[in-house]
Length: 427
Image (cartoon, rainbow, N blue to C red; front, side):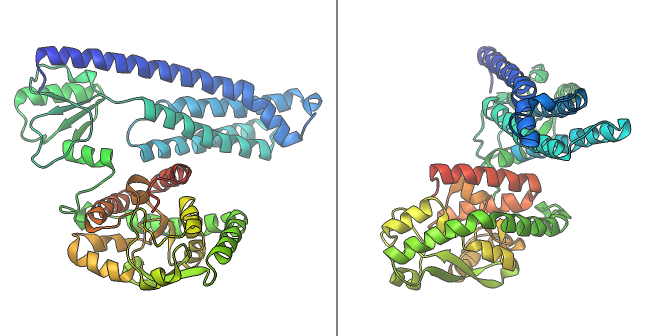
């Protein structure tokens, strides 16, 4: 609860945070403009026409490049304004890319101006990448100011920074997000204060829902099928499968050489067999055979058991393969076969899956989607080796299923790259 003194301290802290956030936003805006109108134009000229082509630039070509650079700048500036959860911010940025570059193409069509398909495609790609980077930097730096009205529900962990007020005279409009345990049980004074805040554009959220989104984790003890979006799993599933196949095929020029190197390392250091196969539980609870490069001594993998941190069964070369996730590359063929997705809950060994289904509430809901090579649980919590870690991992998996979307998948891909680079979660 905030006293007058702590409220003043909180307000000063909030103003400092806002000032720092504004400074970062101004810096990012300036960097966006410099990138768009100084850095990108020569890059576009080089990519479209090749080196030493500045002499052939006509006014029509310059105007076309200026239009594309303006679209880049607009996407990056709008990326600074998006709010909410990371994956929804990412979805907004991608929407800006389609809308702004689509409008640019429409203007070119209407005015019958000079255009270059290559330049337009490059510009849209740069907008997607740079807009996402700008959004990510703002997301990491800016900490929204959150206030909670009323008591904290028993048993609820709030791993967020928030103010707790009990005086309805408090000006709620200074906060970015307002949390409450109930909207229907508020007094008249609180209802009036909330209404004024909502009219000024401040979002009002239930504290449990906000805490779940902040942690990226759902409570498995209270999860129910009613929590799933009515059409989310079916409406996105077909598109997700198409994206999986396209990405898997496009990755083959990189995946196959890396897989060949990994297989050679296994053959030279551990001998045969090179590929480790194991029955895992997949979509709908159906078993399938997963492929991995062998990283343990042969007898250890035949016997099978969960891998633990510092597991002595893993060979020296196997530990290196796991460090950079090279041992997972054969699963690209599981994706092409339809057993797996690129992103989804990690498939468990059938014996462990049957055990967890008996001991962990809501565990079998993981099988509503195809298992993945990487997933939300892996980038948030690493791998699980015991029942308690598995319970937490299931909470992450259910959050993914509950919020299944293209934007969330893109966020997981981005986090996976960071995970591979820093070695987080390696066993």
